[in-house]
Image (cartoon, rainbow, N blue to C red; front, side):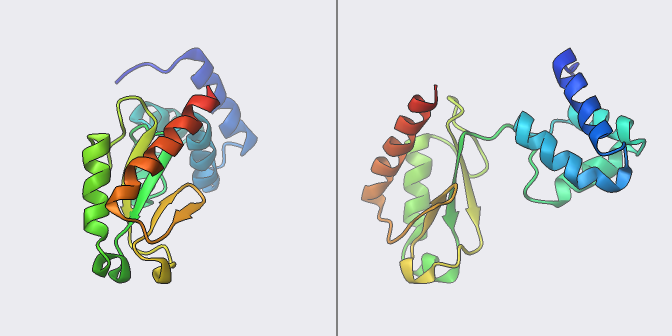
Length: 163
């Protein structure tokens, strides 16, 4: 186990205090902690459990149950490939393979530069646009393997602008 920085410790202390150290507010505390810290490593979970006076296992159980929460750092941009039936029929596997090849990562992994995390999801609900890729709130429809490089380049540019 690694030690949390004083800043992180203080942040988590104040965050739990904001929610009156109420164990019933666990999900709200976790959401806010992840929003600021980017992910919820075991050390953060332990501090939250301690502040809310609940077992570490309860916090871990919530973090691992809900797919929104992550214990590993995510990239600035989460690329989600739709794996629904319409997207599957229209070739989403080729799109996924091209993202994996170009980013040199597998599903669930983050690029070394911290820009991208690659994930899949069951259905975006935009079946008429299949195959679909979403990044944040933006949905790309009728994606072909040839468009993957352009999509990646667009977000690399955005990441550079953020610095």
